[in-house]
View 1 (tube, one colour):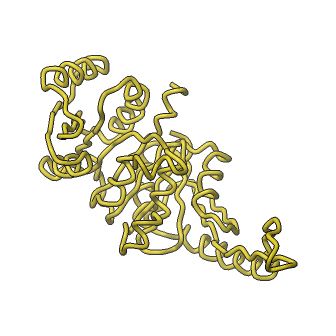
View 2 (cartoon, rainbow, N blue to C red):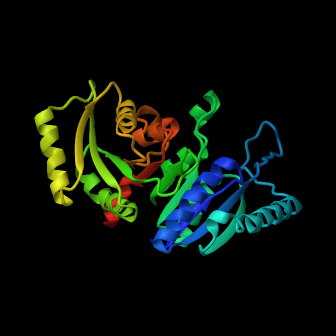
View 3 (cartoon, rainbow, N blue to C red):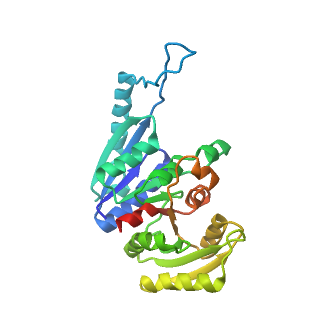
Length: 287
């Protein structure tokens, strides 16, 4: 692991991700890239209110310069944070009307190995409908993302639950999860959830998960768990085994398609009280 991206809006929850990323950077020797996307609104105009013209974004240069100046001052101050001592830190900021796009684009630009971000979760119905920044980054980022919804403690990832259906795509994303677990000498639980609307036989599931385990060395705890919904099953199992991290794959669905079949990973990000590692299934093409 060479480069870790940490988006920040300078809120306390965003520092959860920063402190967790700092510990990971110390363990791996990676550089820490702290990025602030300064959000501004787009203003649109039309020569005739009855005629729809192509939208134009009017950005006031003076305001943008002040936003950048303020952001850089805060980023420079953030470098003095105790958790960052001994870590190579790079900072950058950008004025944008689309925060999650800026984050994913910057991650691609610096070729980040991982995005680590804090989250306070959904606080009201509006946030649940629109999705938090963390959910949107999870949805659109091809690079792995860790969402930290709690204040991190040293060596916090001792028990990891990898929830999957163990289809062929899982073989492509699990190496990243396994390598991450190695950094913390973590215990890995391989978990498959069985629900009433997606029923499968125990004998078939057991073989599928055992074949998967054998492929990667077999030194894992394997579990089959039944619940009403996949999200509930994953969270309930993680609570029962006192997991420190849930690892899961995402399809990165976009547009209308996701409203008819919401990705389980987004539901987990919204509901979980423990950190989540999300690896996009598109990663299988890179393995």
